[in-house]
Length: 315
Image 1 (cartoon, rainbow, N blue to C red):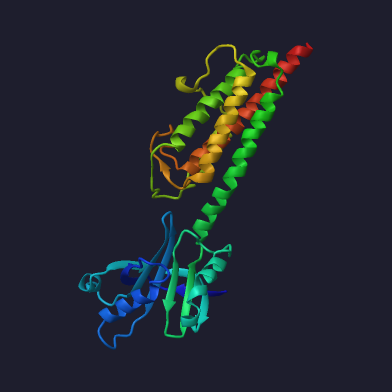
Image 2: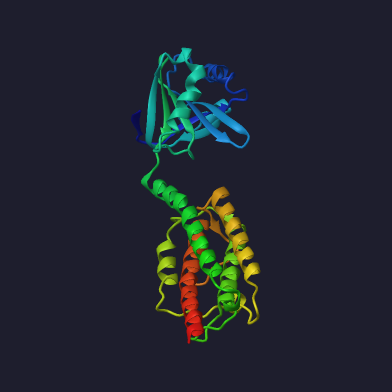
């Protein structure tokens, strides 16, 4: 596979082909007929997968700003940047196999599937098939998104496993230091994580900064075990007797729901339903990391509680 660098954005104009792929040739013929005789310029095919199916745009290079309006077509832009490329020779006889070329190109780990496919018709013999290459920033975000699911799953499972190791009588036994019982601590985690679940499923907007910008700060803040924090009233656990089975079931339900968010939503979006104290409005990716680090913090505390109640029984 070749590399192709487009030094600047290419302004084009054209229209969506209503009958894809059968109507592609007819669409480009219609564009050609609109242009003055002898006006040679490059034609571009732009295709993108949408929930409604493939949208294919037949377009031609724009020479002046007024051309889209002049010819009655819609302006588009072919983005500048680095592309993966495949040159197709004698393309007129291979139109039915072009989709297979793009399918194969998208199997390359370097391809950015969020961007449309581009065809550049160089002449009647040669055509370039282009797929945008991931930028280093998008690669980093994709890697973080891919990592957050397993990290969340492990963190949630670690808490469940540790809490499940408590005997029933130990759930509501106050530790030696006079802090929360194991039941209270887990109830606090449930309150916080369920609150973040509502944030994750709430309203969002496009993010105008790096979607992972706050993660290092969140981690440093929550995993600083030397600093003791006071829980707000709305997430403080009630002083009551807790049922182990109820708490375990609730933890599992929240874990399943957050996993669903990770798998089905755009984690780069900013959540606007609640402004988190200290950190402000977080992206979904940052909010999930808050849940991860907050859970890890309290898993560490839960281990201390287990050590204390176990020691009390041996006295």
